[in-house]
Image (cartoon, rainbow, N blue to C red; front, top):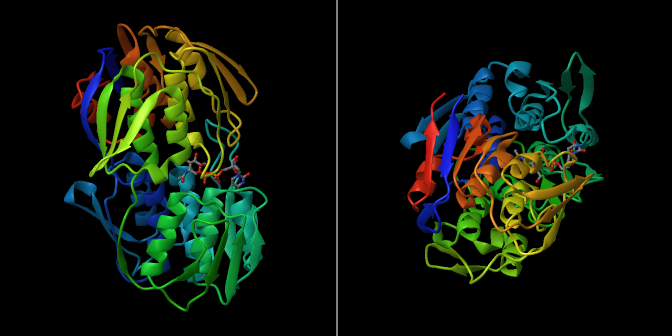
Length: 420
Ligand code: UD1
């Protein structure tokens, strides 16, 4: 298993290009199942999660051709051969459940393995199922699979009891081909949902209200092909914004947009990090002096994203004062805290709260990545630490960050991959 070696090396200077969003791409890819015409995605990120989705779609008989080194995905679901998403692939990635809505809408049946729990919590899929049931799906849960069938999905009014990104995406895709009007209330408002709606509209869907908590979909008989650029990855963006924040210097994030991360940018400002818009993106620099402590509560968009909580904690480890981070989306998402503690951080975790007492300096140490965002938080901490850090189990990192060593080295960081 590969590991990443980092030597803390002071301020960073340079530019980092931000890729297309993993989470948007993982919901845009299953949208190909809704049509027999070609769907092409541009600005796709090159990540192992995308390869897993490619494998899943391939197992259904869809064609996914990666062009231009993987930045363009040319897909066709003209000749699907199966509506069965097997456990062997689904267990690798929860987003696999996103094939359920499209398969059901186009073929009237689907059999999808239930994704298991994952490192950051139980993460059930009950809301995906309830929304589809409201549209007329008949569901049977047996042997670890959900078997869904319908004689035709019908439009429905469905209110999500809690905001769920994935369940909103599944319901939105299914509703595009349902008969009549669907109204999704308390829908997720994430930029990835807006991106999905825009792509579906390019394919001929009739959708209004994406980006608000009520989305209205007027079902159509069929969808056609389209070409769609994947929205910027706001989580990759936020992660790299934290690099100059944590070790000083100034970095320009090419393709960066404040509107994707407004709540996060407010916290950076309060912590003493300046963010300015440039012609090509955003420039981030640490203001004079030490980072100041700030409190953070994770919330659905437009709140502070849970997917940046671990990285923000890395920053706050060396802040002046005490910060409290409250995790409201996932119940077990502080596994990076004990690893950061190995590097000299002072963190107490109690339930959904982590209290971080800032220290002057972190020290390098051998640490272990426990999930995707935790792994990159350890790399950020290592950039600011004294001495050498080896982060092991970096396969988590490769799920969501492309060429991380290259992007950070280009700004002067001493970081390399050790093949294991
Ligand atoms: C997506 C993102 C993930 C991000 C999360 C929250 C993708 C591929 N992943 O995950 O990176 O951390 O949004 O922004 O886009 N829940 C239920 N029942 C359900 C579905 C969800 O109880 O049927 C709960 C979850 O356990 C969690 C909360 O709802 O507590 C929000 O989860 P959700 O928004 O669905 O996350 P994902 O779509 O899985």
